[in-house]
Length: 311
Ligand code: FAD
Image 1: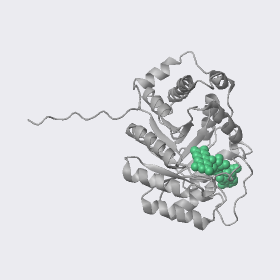
Image 2: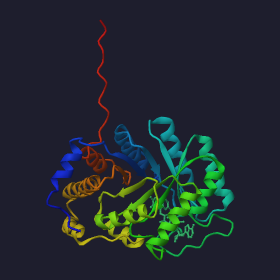
Image 3: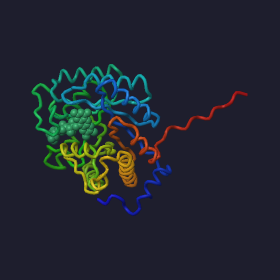
Image 4: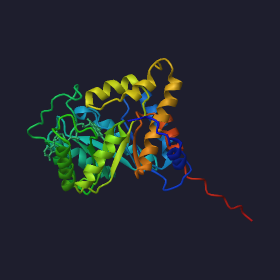
């Protein structure tokens, strides 16, 4: 893919000028590891809250390692903010009974949206997965389990470059259809950088009769080194144009930020031009890049209502 198409400013300007519908956005956060990261997370949440996202989601650590922290974070979001929180949930290293208890706890706490995922084995992202005999075997079974407990809104994961364990795109589409049959109402994709490949992937899914919303996952690149390591493990290709953009910027965080915002904005603008109007941002618990990208896309705080002066 060529990074900057000749009409690059066109879509950005159009999206920013508010021509056409305002894009809908959602934000993904991770539960904090300690008090310092909790403060940083809440600063990010407060900064992004006024952008009125469709929902915000909070990840779930491998093997349920963040069970309590994820729960605490989504419940605090529900109680103390105007946000609509979604809790990620995985079935790794847990029995059905244990997972069902988490699901029921969420319902009782007022959470109505779960992002249902199989998860990866702890300590080996991308390693071989062995389901527990007494556990949910995959995200399809987990989705059905969630819906059997309560009428949650269930989002599921999708992989523009196919899931690393999948033999083909067709298999992934069959799995997505099975998840929809089990009750999934929305898919959120892994992050990607090959937009043409993404468009072909979505076309194929739509031609297969899938109609649920599919939210492209957008990853602003705050650390290129971190992104490269993660991408390698989960089978996401980093195109040469992206590596070239970040080359030599290891010691230059300010320029890195500007480049990262520009790349993500350009991706969203191109996707907007192709008819996409919902974007799911991987925030990595930082607001600055995502906030800037949203502003360029025309996603802003609601204007304050004019006050009527007392006569
Ligand atoms: P599944 O859909 O269960 O697929 C896993 C394997 O099972 C695939 O090979 C698939 O072919 C097979 N399979 C599934 N259903 C069927 C079926 N009906 N018939 C036949 N085969 C089937 N991980 C975390 O640990 N915590 C998180 O919070 C988290 N959040 C994520 C958010 C998003 C948006 C995405 C895209 C991923 C996230 N992940 C998270 C990573 C995810 O857990 C891994 O990618 C994992 O390897 C697969 O999860 P899945 O839900 O896609 O698995």
